[in-house]
Length: 477
Ligand SMILES: *Cc1c(COP(=O)(O)O)cnc(C)c1O
Image (cartoon, rainbow, N blue to C red; front, side, top):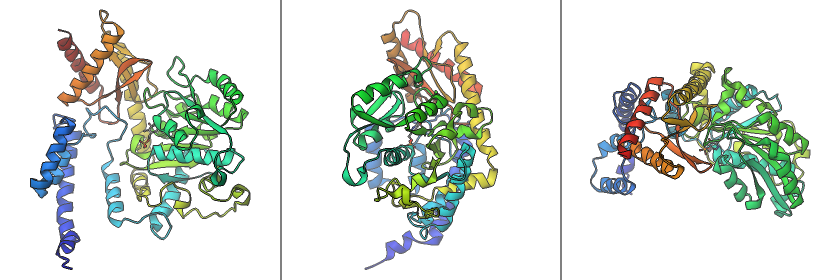
């Protein structure tokens, strides 16, 4: 077989040249976006048009233009006017860590295939555990996303809290978990994947402050018991995705103790507030959780995907996928921590500990405090700005960097306001100067912003409100 293509594909000099070009290009992109030189956050295209472009590109496109076109045709999260979904503008150095992982390509399932990143993973997860306030019994690992981490934690919960041997014998009774009705959809999905069914997801309604109404926990628990559902876990949101409000974790911790439930915290977004002395109070009680999820790619400046799953009792993390029913009793002290696939859902995974370590080693943990505190401060400022503006209504006073609001007008009813706000958001998307998203809570259509870029300023936020007002005026006329 002629290997000429393979030789080109693996040419070190080719890589060097293309790599340097790409880094230069991305550095220019950072300069243009971070420093406000590029006009748009997104060059919006209809999905069909985008598809047609790439279909054509595969046939006739100029290879040398590939990376340029990708940059042009994606959403620029480093632009301070990107105030939409909850992914962080990746810290450039952390993304270089991702490059190492992509090239060295160690699979991480067993220690030999990733010695350094496996050991680093232990260092990193021990560090996060100590910030949570866990003791030496704690342990964790990194895994591919908050969604998978929540599922994994609930699988551990079921293994630990349910007495019969589901792993070998399947379900023998109706099982259930409790969660806030507006929690991230992946918790509901995890429960259904686990075979709990609709009735096994006991959804606790919202309080007036848009978080889990903990005063209803006992009543829902008793009702489930009466229906023959064995509740084994409760999930707290820190915060919930839609509105950014934290659940009362202390109340949930008390409740879980009372009924011997596994207490899991979905801190995919805001678990990172453990790094902010100013906002740490939002996760009061986090050290009482049996397991905690924190996404590196949300409030910790890291590239996608860099999720941490931490366990208060590290031995539990070894039981999730264990065949042995009596595993916990036989647990030895020195269970191998370094063969990660025994504990993770994945077999092969990326060397994601490198991104964490790179940031921590280079800048120290203070960088995480600066990031979280800056963004939460901005969230509060934006809330004040909206409150002071009679043309807008705030869904709720923000607890984080997630802020939901809507444009209002006395002469319009709720249905008309919903339509108006949805149209405003679509127009913002198509204009592309700012990028925000939307959500529906209790039937009300809100514009939803997550301030993810620490270089977004209150001037940007004021300008966004002015632009929205302008759009609303033209739509109404
Ligand atoms: C983003 C998010 C998730 C999902 O995490 P992924 O990393 O996107 O899979 C789960 N829960 C909450 C609260 C989130 O904000």
